[in-house]
Length: 255
Image (cartoon, rainbow, N blue to C red; front, top):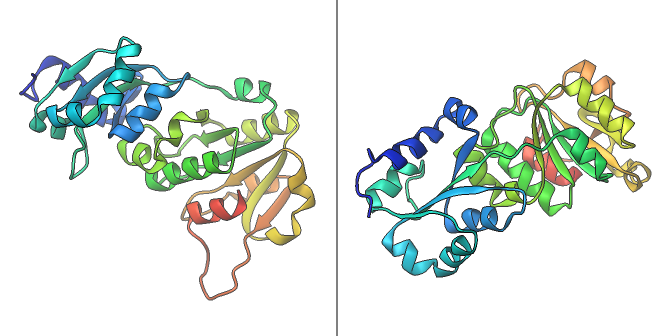
């Protein structure tokens, strides 16, 4: 059993709590049996290493069986080490190191998607993770994050996605105008969410064909030039006195 957070393997994994280290290593941490199980079952994600406590090994037997079928290295660690590997107040005793996948927009478009979600400079990792989860629930074919968006492989985002991060392609670091052009060339209509567009209730006809939804930054929404580049501008009607909806709530309504 590994009992020291300074163990070489543990120390290397702990570095992945920092974004710059995730970028350098092209790997990230996944915490908890549900999310780790989703990663292990995903054909598009490579789990590199698994750390479990004794209690988790007893509790999550099926998870260990799944790891064994993939020939995955499993390290038994103390509760102290498990806590050091996570960034939650209540560690669940299961942490995996997962390679960052490399899906790109051409690969997504080659599958003739019917629904794509584009987050434009969405900065809150909790919102990004929740939108990924919502996109998965709505049957979206991919989520695209433009430059300036939160890291989908940070702990808060991974947790908020509730495993959905491993269910559909997530493309990152793209230019918004290039993305709009590529999506349009791929046969998708472009819908931009704004405060003054057409009422969502009037969009039935536009939603019968493949579409890509553009959702903007939590504080500033979409830049005027981004909104103008879309085929249609759409607003979610507000019937009460709220000024607007939270990004993830608006995305849930639209999707």
